[in-house]
Length: 457
Image (cartoon, rainbow, N blue to C red; front, side, top):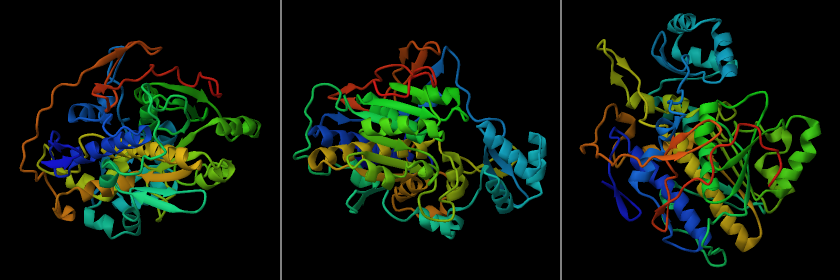
């Protein structure tokens, strides 16, 4: 058993890596950040019974009685001429880029073309067309690449202030009660972030999970999505509790004044696009801090800010394939062969999301003391390195099969909650935080997608 906070970590998922430790420590990082913000060391906490279902919130969600749609048919592992590759084609524009890269018009043609190509060649061809793919590498193969070395550099949360100072902290440090609360305490009986405004420029899972938690803590969260690339509806429903949702094109010059008004009224901005994608709109962390010195900015991406893939798109499943996780979780298939596997939940997304929330709240606490904002950055690839660092002394590069001597513990069934919404009745699991011993909940259901005005309430 591994210790996190004041309790031990059961292995309820099992498997070769300590996914449970990653989950609990990332949520504990968010809890400790809110405790620092409120000046009440023991007010917020978590338990395995809350954290485990929260990390699989999409799997537990039911929308008007139906199970939400998961991966699209073209997403997943495929054999190549010399190994395996993982594809991601959930979004229509990514599917089209994948088909274009392979000169295919159907799933059958994709399979046939991939079996004729080495995995690294297929990866390069798909990435060059803006598609999403990664060859399945062993851990040692990943660490031997320039991108693998870059992904492991620097702290889990890298922090920069408007005056040029830098700082950072790792997962274990964030999960411990650290920081000076003097002069920062905001001792309120209600939700601690009430009255704060968060501009949510994120998509998919990690960023929306972060801002979903900030909404549960009382913040006014306004999510902005581009009209030309709508979010997948079921994914949006899972992560939009407590938010407003506007469809707003930041590329249109006519919208720049409105965007600046939103930024001027925000306390925090969270961005979740590939590294550098928003810079041309004046939305880089440094530009935002220069224009709005009191603003807190937290950015996340897939691959980090350094290395040859820093500007590429990516997803949790793709990072797992590249960094060695898919190989480590490989299994024998029904035909006696081998196929790559995956973590039991999309833990890189969720852990990064809770790290983003922790960073935002810590910077908001520091702002109360100094009057100055700041920026923080996280990436899915760096979170994967934190997961490997929890390998409890094992040589993670040689892990190939489940090695935990402990039998997975059985946690109690999730306590489902129900809420009416414009999508129908929702069955969902709540946030993974306790507030003074009571489970936190979301203040409102997911709003109709893109229907909110792009203004602060």
